[in-house]
Length: 307
Image 1 (cartoon, rainbow, N blue to C red):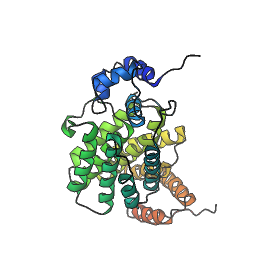
Image 2 (image 1 turned 180 degrees about the horizontal axis):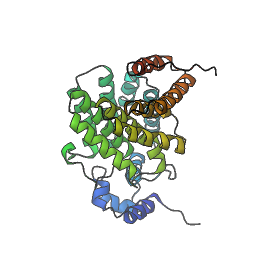
Image 3 (image 1 turned 90 degrees about the horizontal axis):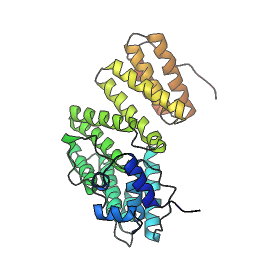
Image 4 (image 1 turned 60 degrees about the horizontal axis):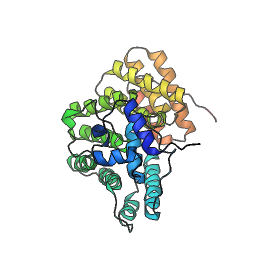
């Protein structure tokens, strides 16, 4: 049985989506290199392959590219760092140092990860937002040297890491006080995740995060109808797709916005559900914080459950 090479997969998907070689490989490799990869004349490195596949919205697990021991170690460290951040931890400084000091030089995709995560570390250390933003923008420009936040384009295709960097840029812009720019980026990301540019796994990992950030943004701005629409969209998506890590956040935002829209009883039902999920997660601190938040708006007593 003939094997379907990664180059053939890239070419087939690129042509099916009507993406030019120039647009796809921008910042990743030259057009000539991409042409040789598609024609089977050159094998991409593992990181280059991942970047091309992610921009096309293709899963990366179907293709095997040999990696060195150092690249394998860096990939392992990337997973560990990401896992710590997903668990709301922030102790990544030593792992970043190990990542940078391995014996082989970092390629551009590893440099991008390192630059971005250094910015994340600076954020945790409460560096000024303009300093953190400079790390994030420099990271994005490793693969998109001419990227312009003032010219977000529908023609662009991004890797998963590039999209995560954009999300963090939006959050830091908000911290910096550039509210209009932050909102523009978040809505741009929402539309990107709702397009057909990404595979289902990538959408499932990051789309709820974007919706949660947007819902929180709408709430802070007092735009409760928009908060409700976005939070309910996120809640329905998480339940339908089995992406449960943010269900409590979406339920809380849905309920809180409904209360402000004059639908108190319906809102309380969602708030109750959100607190029950937080309790199951053992998040006592979040329960106390959010309980106080709700009680500033309405008289509210949280139902107690024994699980």
